Image (cartoon, rainbow over all chains, first blue to last red; front, side, top):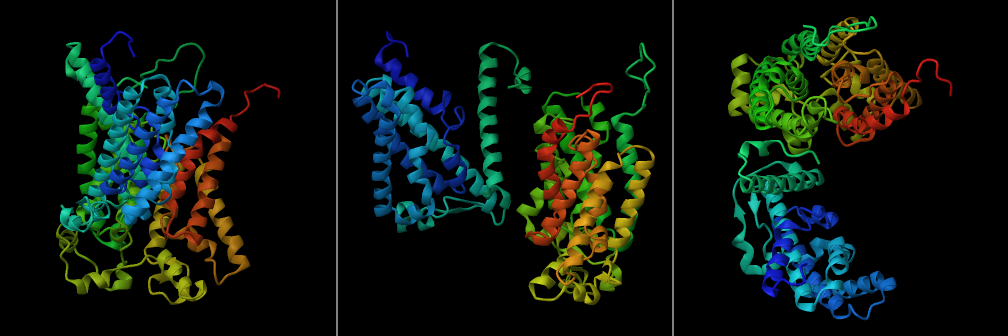
Length: 233
Length: 345
């Protein structure tokens, strides 16, 4: 980050990075295990996304608070300790207030501790930046991750069973029982199975790259046709 | 057409092209197609036409989107082979959208997303089949019974009606579709009926060997395959390795416990065994390419097919076996490089 840029500019950059440019799910491809395993419907994605978001903000703030007092040599165990504390609190809160969803997400809530996104942001950003910037970074990165979880979950749910926001009552209580949208019956079972997660994520990454390429070629005033064949990675 | 003029040493020129190879494979699959029509009715002809139209549209669209020249790739016939291979695998009277989705998935996800013909690690036809089997299991396991068993042959109009509207009187449908012989043996075992009893009592099984129609169909594939071997379109290591491993596994287990394990001949002549041996695992793109590697690859598929058929959850395991061995092809190729002539180790 530029030292001489204004706080507002910095904030805008952090938000843009987290939501789009350096999206942890679509660009960094971190946290794949929970992302692929729980996103068989939109509500599961939302639940895990919110939990990850809160952990990310809390851990970023705490890490940033103590950043000047942590010896470099032992920083990773200390970060993990902080993250584990935050995850434990979230885990217990979820067990208390959204118990059904907590049971569905199962092992993946405690496993947020090992989610590389969180340690990655603590190490790459929070340990080097002031508290407000770290909090904002946690929020932006968490929202970017949450967005992908919900979109991927919704996509797979729609393809596999033709519904959206099935089981929303697990998160929002009994009044949410009729929030479920039934669009059609039946569907492609594969989308709900593990291969569907990989294929769906691949399509989302490809879509993001396609949008990016199109934007770049517009900026350079090159006709869109040249964007048809993406550069070999 | 000689695109690569020869210079220098007198190389042996094989004079083949993708289109030529694909044409030979297509010729070889004519006989099985006719046998299939004879025993299982016109369904497959309708499905094949549908599949070809879908294949053409998808192929054209994908080549256009990828900015590739359409004509040479469209006319090389590789999509035709994928489409034909997939058509043979799906039930003849399945609804029309099944083959359309399957062909689209096979060509788009199995071939073009990897970079087109020559770059796909997995056999596109088998990928399409596995996709359909996992996604729509109910439609994929109802096979038309051969006319000798059901006593009723579906006419062309009946097949068309069933495929496009799904509305055929239930009385006829229950009569003409049922489980395949592989299915029968498997469900028989779960009900405590020994394989020997199933083989001799099930209506769909011919003379205690394998299924009515299925035997003739498999033999037709074998004849077509021999034509391919004769024209040097495919290498002998594939069928020999595959059929050898499958037959050996079946023979050993059958000898140990004939009540639980079907005899080798049953395995060799039912399901898609011969289709796989001569037409599926011989795909030059996704198969191993070194002489020893071809043998290991084919034998691996044979063993896996037996394992999935005998202890797995699906009645036939050819698609999964082929896909699993496709993953190992780069590894097999690396460790079976032939020694350069004159090189000492």
